[in-house]
Length: 269
Image (cartoon, rainbow, N blue to C red):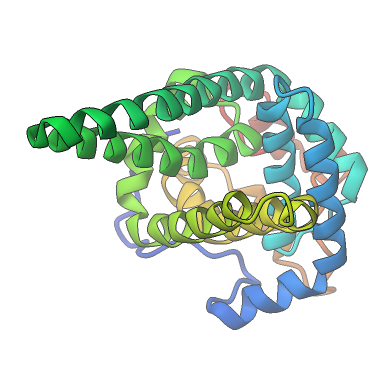
């Protein structure tokens, strides 16, 4: 999958046939799945308790929220469990990478702040350090979407995520603001915020992230792949129905061409 589509006539973020834009649309979808998303948040927290499973659990959470945000059908626990198992290896790798950066942040930030108080010039590397951490956070908005939606390798995912942060800057910054805001509330008001942590923030951020950033991944990563092999993106074909049936990520609904496409190295899942 490439980063730039071959068709110059395609502009803007690609939309599936049913897709409308705007806050009202995603608010409607979110509240139509509100109780399921609360349950999903609780399941996610439970799966994160061993800590080492945070990465695979995040990939599974992203897969379910992607389906909800794109108005696809999803079974709450079975799809979460399926995503957890399918993306366990890559999720584990990125989960460990994120853990390393979390440790670096909580060790490095106090060190730089204390040092900067004695030597004001240290504020320069402090700001660079904080900017670097923010970039890593923003890359995660795309990393787990690619982990749960493609068969790209780890290096490709990291490279693409770094570029997509820039290509989808407006959407990325919105996700960053909401993420920092919610996580700050959870930390500052802990332990009373424990109820909130168990029921809301992770599924809300994942849903918002998929709603805003998944179309960017589809435009620059998924669609160029199908353009290159000369196949129709099954996501578009299966949603373009007259009987308004929902899309399901199951083999039984695939055409022979789509099955052949999935055998290739990089495909949408």
